[in-house]
Amino acid sequence: MAQAQAAKAKKVKVPDIFLWQGTDKQGRKVKGQISAENLNQAKVDLRRQGITPLKVRKKPKDLFAPRKPKIKPSDIAVFSRMLATMMSSGVPLMQSLQIIGEGHENSSMQEMILAIKADVESGTSLAESLSKFPHHFDDLYVNLINAGEQSGALETLLHEIAAYQEKTEALKAKIKKALVYPTAIIVVAFIVTAILMIFVIPQFESLFKGFGADLPGLTKLVIRVSEVFQEKWWLIFGILIAAVYGAMESRKRSRKVQHFLDRMLLKIPVVGEIMRKAAIARFARTFSTMFKAGVPMVEAMTSVAGATGNVVFGEATLIMRDDVSTGTQLNKAMIDVELFPNMVVQMVAIGEESGSLDAMLAKVAEFYESEVDDAVDNMTALLEPLIMVFLGGIVGTLVIAMYLPIFKLGAAI
Image (tube, rainbow, N blue to C red; front, side, top):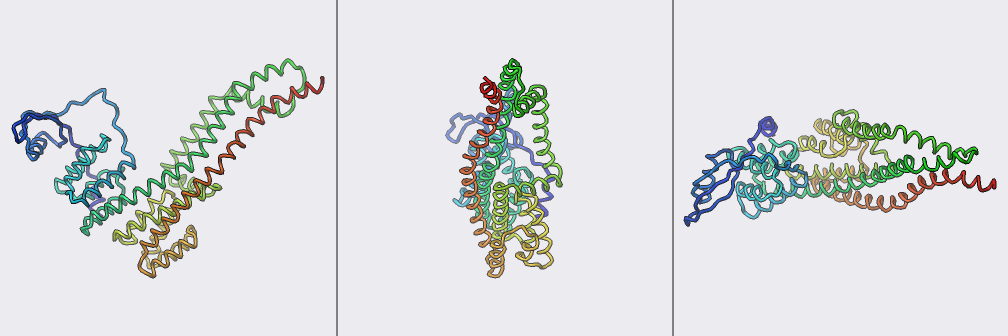
């Protein structure tokens, strides 16, 4: 592990692309392109493939080429599954990395995999090579790969990692669905209200000026709000955008802000319960995977803390780690932090007593992943009628406010 962490400071050279022409074993002229660290390495790799290089040159950079695509977590999950499948089929590690790298559609992913392959070829362990890309392979991933290499069970660990990442990505998708849906409703409601205030209400205001009568209080209020929107719409939108952006940046940069926002998120009705269940599912899934891989409990809990997706649960996990390191049982430490339901604590206690903690944690993860799935579906079904009531209430209030003077005028006639 120490070697893997120290390797983070090093940088691996991303291989260049070389265009080549040559002859194959039958003497036929062939051409193509190959990734290599330098010109000599490209020629050596070509000869290994049975090709006699005649012309090899570095591929010129295209100044008008589109920006390289980003590497997404889903790309890493697919890479893990492909590597696990190929190695379990008997394909050597170097050849597996070469095949996956050259065949990947994402050019950024292709460059990274081929760079890892070149680094491993030079004698570096796979865990150390992966640790040089910490934005894509976190401590959890590197530690599991390191455990697999040390125990000689890399293929098995790769399957565990692939399964873990696939389930984690599925859980992330459910959480995004839970957060995006209500956020989209609020944004749409605000935009609709702003359009009515800026473009529709002023038309009625000009009409009411010809009445010469006193307007109802609700109508006056709506007209006043409309005037503020017309005069300061740029300021209102600017403040809202700045507030959202500021909150997101503060959450990234400040641990206190992150703790405050995550704690408040857990207190939001319905959504907070989904976030809580998701954090428990991540905690249990990550802990189970690492413990099954043979990573010591205290060491595993450090990685688990960063994988919960919520600072409140992350800090609680670190407190539990400190308690466990002094001899306290895990289930007792979980009771002390007062975040985990009694069912989870009891299952962990049973797992500790029976020596099957990884299996019990896996069952906890499966249960709460299912709970998150059901909760998101239920929330979506519940929000659909609430959306109609919410938007209808806003539009209805504005319509009533605009027609009250007309009704009042009709009653006077």
